[in-house]
Length: 112
Length: 112
DNA sequence: TTTGTATACATAGTTTTTCTATGTATGTTT
DNA sequence: AAACATACATAGAAAAACTATGTATACAAA
Image (tube, rainbow over the protein chains, first blue to last red):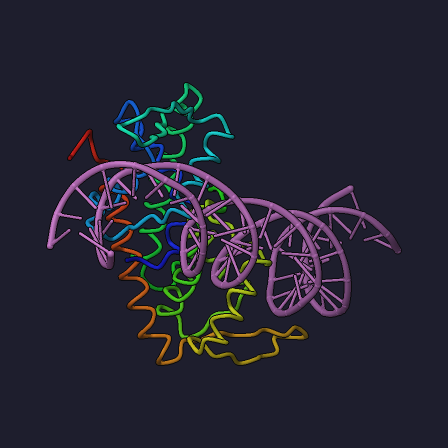
């Protein structure tokens, strides 16, 4: 498991990205999917996941619909149009940030 | 400029990495170097930089020496042995995190 | 000459984000 | 019956960067 600090700023982008590939997903499912995709290296805790999802909804990037499965409630999340646009921007920004980061991590002595 | 959240968790690693390539650097110099290396995309603010440096010192990863340049004080930072070891670990962890992130950002539909 | 910009440090207080811990409840396996 | 997995939620803590502010020197431009 990576130190939790690294995830900061990237969690909502990860969630949004997953939702671009799935019409709708529920919270628990998202956490499991990230766990699998990251080979157990990113483990999203409930205390991070649900507040993050609530914030995405407050910001209008996702909307929800409830569904009963047997006796249990599931709350599905799906992207709004605003959310789709925002996801493109956020993923792009994250990719740019990653490549900038890498150029620094690879950089050799005094470029000045 | 990237949204500030992205930097969280990576700033100290960036600073440490720069110090592996320079015997000693002072705060202002570090901020400028990052600005140049990132092509103005990562702008470290004083309110982030100095507390981060102080924490690295408290944690024993860097040590300092003061120097007068003309009439102005400069505080140089340099890696301790502990800092060298820690830098290797942190850079490695960050690289791994980046590659995990990328695999998620690239991922296509339902792998389940 | 005074205004602005760059250099160079520092800290107080705020905001954001994730965390730990806890709670509720159902379903399944041992 | 106990343990574990599924499935949601929130309160409060911790971490890290931010804004804003402060001190001070050096130099260029108006």
